[in-house]
Image 1 (cartoon, rainbow, N blue to C red):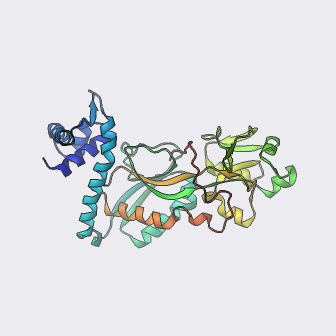
Image 2: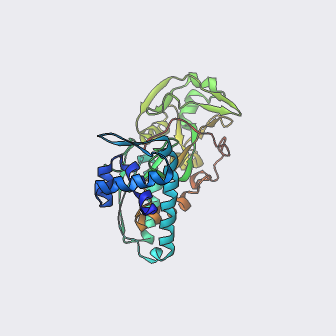
Image 3: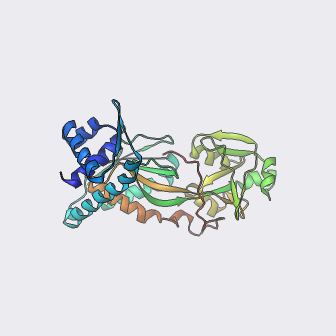
Length: 319
């Protein structure tokens, strides 16, 4: 049987978690899906899936084979594009999701510029700090700030998300400026409730310092945390994509510059490159160029501790 189709069937089953759902998407019978899977397993000489009456899961061999099958499909799509698909005018509706703070500060302006280039593309942007099921919600693209992504999804790096310990000049005038990590115990600290347990985690060279701080204010929304810090409510940790302008204008003051905070990745996440709309492919390429990768546009001209480090935080913000 056609190995390219077998690979497409396997990847679709892995993403959907069901032979029936994969058959519906691929517009073939469940029996035909099973035959393609069996042909691929025979060719590879390994069982790729655990099958139950409710769903299927990947075996160890399936976990190893999935990235290679995706690369095979990606190569096939690239050949089709080279053959002329890029000459088409992108059009259609793209459903996108992101955290509110990132959408407000960075994503929305980028999407507006993208639509100016491609006016036939319509965009529906929703915001949430909670995880979104791309299949159930029919999402084309999720912008996620995380270091732990689902293995069944395709993720393309867009930028590095750095954070800064900061406070308003008003707060520092009234309460003083901490000079050491231990000084933070004497201050009001504001946190994001999703990551409060590990938010105050600093890196000094090879040493990790995690002071116990008094959390006087917590919220599940970065926009509210930013507003509270600007209002003089205390010391908080905020992503630079959201407060770079306030830092440049002096409305916020960066603290403990010798202490680096862990970073996370900003990713474009989507289900598959199979039959991917041209508009989506162009948008992801545009966002990669727009945001700047390891040197994000919002961090340029800022002096940040550990900006050259690649430290990773195991706690992620689902987007």
